[in-house]
Image 1 (cartoon, rainbow, N blue to C red):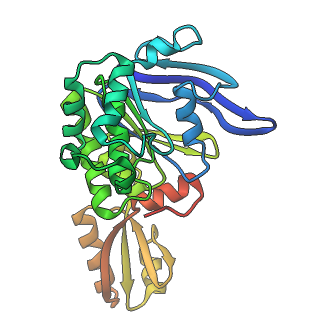
Image 2 (tube, one colour; image 1 turned 30 degrees about the vertical axis):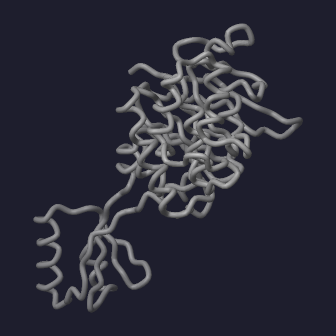
Amino acid sequence: MDYCITTDRLTKRYGQEVSVNRIGLAVPIGTVYGFLGPNGAGKTTTMKMLLGLVHPTEGDICVLGQNVNEKNRLSVLRNVGSLIDSPSYYGHLTARENLEIVRSLRGLPKGEIDAALDTVRLTGTGNKQASKFSLGMKQRLGIAAALMGRPKLMILDEPTNGLDPAGIQEMRELIKSLPAQYGMTVMVSSHLLSEIGQIADHVGIIRKGELVFQDTLASLHAKSSRHLALRTSDNERAATLLPNSKGTDGWLTLPQLTDEQAAEASLLLAQNGIGIVRMEQREKSLEDIFLEMTGTEAAL
């Protein structure tokens, strides 16, 4: 598999405090990579190191096939768009005027402005000053500026923060469209598992500066272990007949069973005069898995 971003032992210390600890990112080309973790886990620091905004204490960074160093950092980053913290803009200017400044500084053709405005759905803002935009519109203006020149990689740090449900939906659709529309790779961070679960192909989970999971979203789902839960008329006796069962909170839990095995268990209990009051299949949610991996309450 080809990767747009890789890091080796990437570390950032502030004095004795370790903010990011020897992480090895692997972001596949052409995917939406969700960088997930609680607030303060090291997501923003990691992204700033990728962009050269923070100098690593140690470790290597490879972006778009090039090992990033002080000599080539600017040339590599010409193919990277980003939105870190809050978007930068001139409040007294319109969306188009703001993008004209970006276009002029980067020497891009004028058509880039219309393309960027259309992608983020800001073509109808006319003469409205950016200072009067809603938070969602300001976020989209920031992404429009990052899209100028159609970079190969987009790095977005918590782009849905502070948005209302409609704004979150718009941002989600925009991010999901970028790989197919422009062939971009998108790395997006969030502390909201539900958001990452709806937009990402691959996921990295960071906890206290350490990468505790990295794989496809499907692999994360696969960690959801299924089991069968029973409530019977006599759980104590039922447990002696079903040796693999465990009792908790008035329920008996069994490992995942086939239909035939479940039928055999049901018949065994009935033959011993034990009625099944309720039987249901359960599995860990993504939130449960996130909680186990990060040791924090999952944000929904």
